[in-house]
Image (tube, rainbow, N blue to C red; front, side, top):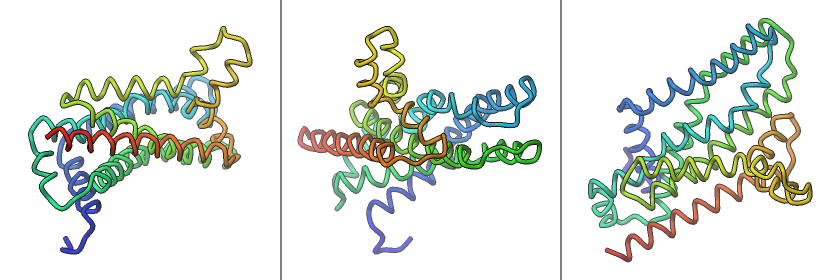
Length: 241
């Protein structure tokens, strides 16, 4: 490791190494592939369609569960073990800590998604799917992973308990995913307003293969919001010491 490497890069490398030298990443990835594989092969064999529509249709809900499972330990475990206090004695800022851990969780989430590319390959072997929605679906998935990673990191910053961090992150992610569905019986104007805040709606828009700047701004803003909230949470932790 280079001596002049940024603290954020050092933290990123440490977290990535920790992910893939522990069973957590493999267990979470394995369960994710089981869930996503069921959705794909259910469509492929039972409905006899070479497409990823059902897979992408439920992907936001699946990621709402699995990304918090990846992020729950990032800061909660360090606080519980006391290693976070040691980290604060080093020449590193809260922004650098959050940046390194966010990048690690995003990369881990993206790696978890990579094996699902075999579903796309299978579709092209046995059918002629439209490339636009497929590319859009994977791009939208990366936006979701970034946003949910930031949410998970925030949840992990407010508690020392990994399980509590998981449930906080899951609750926030699922609300952003299904917010418009919760208001299905409300007046159309209200549903339309809250639909703007729905991660599912923006993901669905991107997964059609049409990249709208409003959808990109939404995911970037959601990610930035929880990134900043995590930084502020760590600052308050540092001030309380």
